[in-house]
Length: 490
Image (tube, rainbow, N blue to C red; front, side):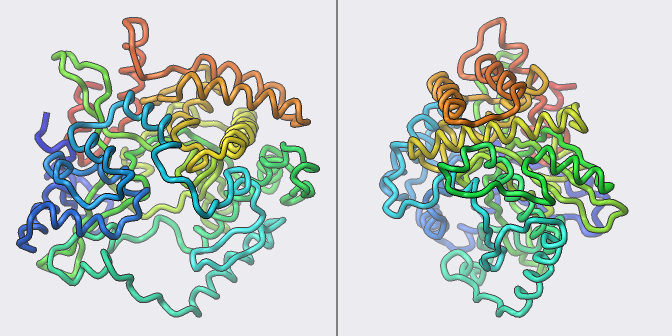
């Protein structure tokens, strides 16, 4: 296996023939070495300076992304993360470590001094902030939905561009530095489409919250286009000529982090693909443990208006670091090595959910949102229960298993204790007048009991685990590690 687990293929840029100007990639290891040499300071000091500007919760995935000889350098970490930093510095993440970390996350992070909104509050929220932080009320129909996106765009154009922040943003003036964002890349969709995605994601969340007892929440039933559930809204959109479908997807996880470094020969930027390498706990044919890249998984919902009157609405359902289980906008930068929907860097499960299967999927998303967000809120879980009651992979696999009776995702780390707590939360909600679709309840109960777990494997489970591992990795990628895995797949 390669010395650097995030090593890149030199031929990747040449393969991007659909791009008029290929995106130039450089590995994180190379960028770190090059930049520290230019600065002429020790690895330790350079790393400390780079990490200084990153909020400590975002440091956790970043620490796992660093090449080993960089991870082993003691850098300036917040006190509560130092123990974990040492652990990650010595080796790779594994499903076992992920599960232990998820279970202990509630104790690792300091108590919240300013309690933010709970997972349930976020799910039920009837307002949202646009990219310029202006607050808007959630629309109640398609006309307002369109007009608010336009109005937001106009108000953003009037605002003065903010000055670059100090810290990491200021480091770009020093030759060859790394910034934690993808400079020089454009978004996959227009600003107006991204605003519409953002609104529609929260529309689906609040429609899901209608499942809960409205009296206890002290709010009226929310309706959009006169509909009070996600399934009814999709039927309503279809009657207006919209095309609606959903697919389970995986891509290489970067936890919202991007990185780039200026090129010395031009005004262009080199992009630094980020990923978290991990030990899978499975062996290859040479009896060596397989390493892979941690996937981000979600249910991608695509709503296409009739006759291309506007761009598609792109949403994703998953348990997220944003602090809730629910829908979020799929407002991605165009990172062809990570989120190309047609170039193989995104892996889709074979089933495309349409019509009745899609209605079943949306019913389940609403039920799961009610259960998971209630559990996170009642127990005041950190990050809305992220990890403890499932990572994005677990929530998506639970949904896929409930819909199809199997899943194509790996690694699954949702522990037995938390499965029991989620089941108990469902029973509690049913006692308190929640009346979801009966079939959704049965499907969820079977999935929470029978969905696989990737902490330990036996001869009975190993073959399927390896199948799911390979199915969760991209079929096309600049990472040599994935290219090696694909050779095993073929």
